[in-house]
Length: 88
Image (tube, rainbow, N blue to C red; front, side):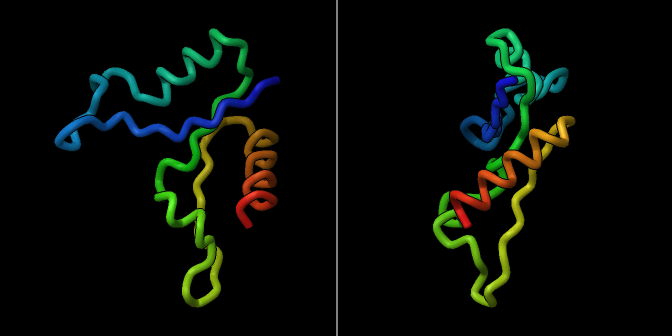
């Protein structure tokens, strides 16, 4: 099925949450994605800035970490494979 990758952070002006504490941005993305026929929602890319993707290695030559969250192990492996192929 379809995989949706959620890179959002529900933070508004003044670093305030844009959603109440009874639901999360990820839950809202999942609700919309499922209504559109997506089978899996993964959370990724929301903990690093774009500059990290331009330079995926540290000054010491180490690969930077990228977190992937979600329940579907096969979809997470697919996303990690795509990231490695496209971003190094």
